[in-house]
Length: 101
Image (cartoon, rainbow, N blue to C red):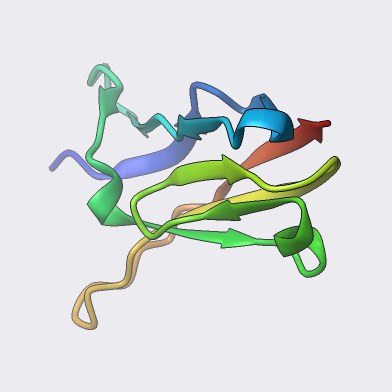
């Protein structure tokens, strides 16, 4: 059985430019145990939640597209989306976002 044991954000530290509303899409890998290679997963399988107060500086869509709004910084938590039937015991990963003017 190939169950994920961790998540990893390839772009865990992102810097965006607010002057042109720069965007970047989160790239998330599922990490497996038992000599199974890590695999990039479609963002539809994850939730993207930004910390309170950071919505002034950037937005993040439900597909992981991060858009610069104003200079500042914050964090996005990425977790496996709960399908209502399966419980996942996989810790989230985090993306640090810095927006420059």
